Length: 165
Image (cartoon, rainbow, N blue to C red; front, top):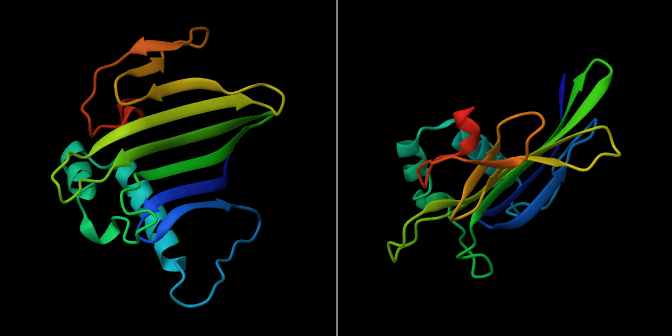
């Protein structure tokens, strides 16, 4: 069983950074025109982005209606993180996954995925183990249960490592 624990989004429309903790019941309450729909749009956008192909990702990173629109976050990169727990009978596995990409701006600077990570741990006491680590220069993944996250992989600038597995 997979249980979603939280979602963090940033760099989307009027959203600088929002962390949504998910519990038994969730509601988004605020005055009109404060960003509730934008939060939901950002979550859908972030999830859709993960599963799309490279060409569609490139179009998504250039989609003007979703780019940051106020002066505080005008050039902010899009970020998306999810936290969940996978229950496997007698043990829980905690999972953190996220990525960040640069929006394609009017100055024609290219969009690209800047970072991506996948971290997991068993139980509450253990520290997280990296399974995917991507920055603007290097991409690594953990290739075995006993190894570390040091196996290099070549992917396109607009491709996520998580899709490779």
